[in-house]
Image 1: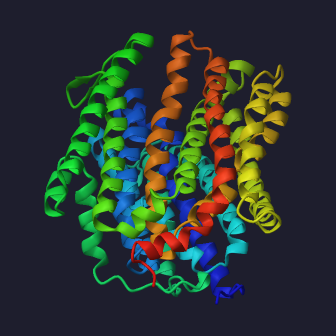
Image 2: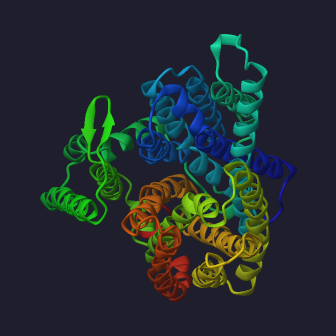
Length: 534
């Protein structure tokens, strides 16, 4: 029998996990506001900064979220979060001692690895503290905390660096630090306190809130390391052999590898022709940036395929409830496609404002950053309870309809917003646009994680995370930049072009509305047929 009461410990856990997400985005995004100082101090260019902000971080963040998500499904989630936060805080602070590109890259790599646990472990933990009818509010709170982290990264990074450089303008700074180095060090410190608090948080009984008994995992660490080896291209061949993959599975894997290589090579050729770019020089090597871009995407595609194929060999129940659930696969596809739009828009909107309305970087940062923070908090906090109300009024389908409204209307509002003639008009329209754009996260996430058993929520979150990160962060900003370069720097056209992705999103949501009730009802049956439940 499920329980509906929410304890004080549950609210405390929600606060800690929300702070974890805020800290994650703060440490991740602080690089953006410090970029001009770093470039001037270390004599590196925009290409290298792009690698640090996007490619290096996204690749390791997405890859390591998988084993950390699997560990969250078998071990103590409060400990997974605690250790991960301490790890990425150390990595973030390491950037303060960087004297060149290499150590900065190692720092970003470490931050990416550590932050890979935030969503899988945090989501799994909270779903065992809160009943289904409160999970929209939970996901709304998490989405709001992400906005807080993004906003604070600009405030803390900019203010701390400026204060330090002004104070020591005449020299004599401790350890010879520049303002940007001090900002990295300062941003890393709160993570250690948060890590200690999470270590002492009570671990809830897995599955109790859903009335589903969950067996203890006898070897979560071994399973986690095995998962990392099974998804990493190259080492995955050893995993296939050890698990006794059939000839058909070997053929499927090799076919995926061949198709990915051919497909990515074709994309490199097409994008190089559409928007030629100067070579990127890294460690003395000259690299076509399009090759680097599609190489990362191809790597991600192989990791995703290896993950799903590996689950079919090692964890049949999880495979049946994830890949075997059309609704879950559709929900993941919708989230990944919308992330392409979100990253593409937010990555270039500040530049669009400065270029179109003639504002300064400082003015744009303060006004746009504050607006994004406030709306980023208000939107999900309204959408979370609204999502719960829709689910209560229209079980299973209510959350789909709320998501459909938000993602179907947002492109039209976006066109209206980016054609504003005056700055004040733009900000007024953008406020409405942002509210609509944030309404999809609580309902879709609550629906998605409710379609699997409690022990599977960590790996489900990790699977979604790698898909949305590789395609969203990997393609969204790149696509907008590609169109901008090809159109002579027309950012309005470039930003609005990414909204064409909304067409397949709407079609997928219509299919989801017809499927979700059936797949939700079949969840326990699929688990029993795979031997998970008796």
